[in-house]
Image (cartoon, rainbow, N blue to C red; front, side):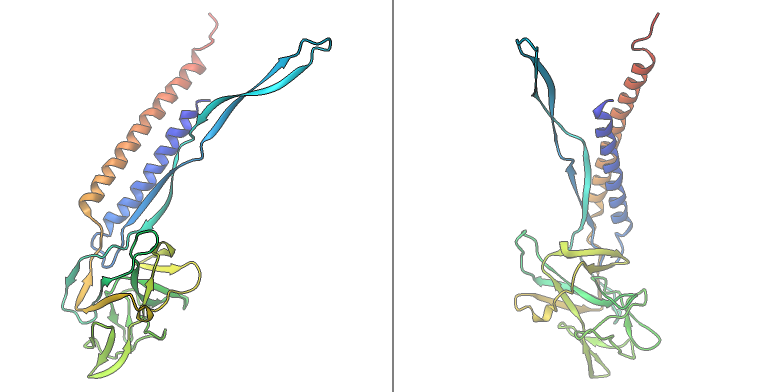
Length: 277
């Protein structure tokens, strides 16, 4: 069997999955707070090939001694190891709507991997668990609670739902909420030093694998601002994404041609090689 057959097939599968990821990025180019995904490609572990032989000894019993000789290495293809959200700050767009809140990164520490951390709103998930988001396109439900567009409660600094009873509230740059001139609560804003610890859940939500993120207000070296009447736009670069999609398509097409060539070779080997006249 031709080893290259599987190598080309793994390349096609990888580029197909990468295209699906890029298509999802492009589909969310206008989604508030959306963070584009990045892929990491990795080769399968390289295998070392050896040839097993036997050497006869010049003795009366004609003994054989097994030994191996090194042939070389062979690569077994590539795969998409993981997708990682890119938490680069998106542009802010003014809407003038009181319930639209945007997080503006000012000074966030750089971790050991050379990447800045990120701040996120704290949300109560569908099952009462803690979720996080950068999408500040909020609303006020019929009971006066501040919620996401999908109806999930926005939590305050103490982990409680925020009740404003009006959509004409005021939020200062520190996340403090005032309704009719009275202090209501302070937005629950969490800080993630390493965005790789966050798992994307869909609908703009993220979760931690283990535990919870610390409050951004307790981090002395973290600086950010809340902008009321603004939303953070998606950080997807449409031009770059289209270029990457075309590159992935061309790579898929090249692997497809290699696969077709191997298929013709196997067909020829099965139907013509060794045929008796």
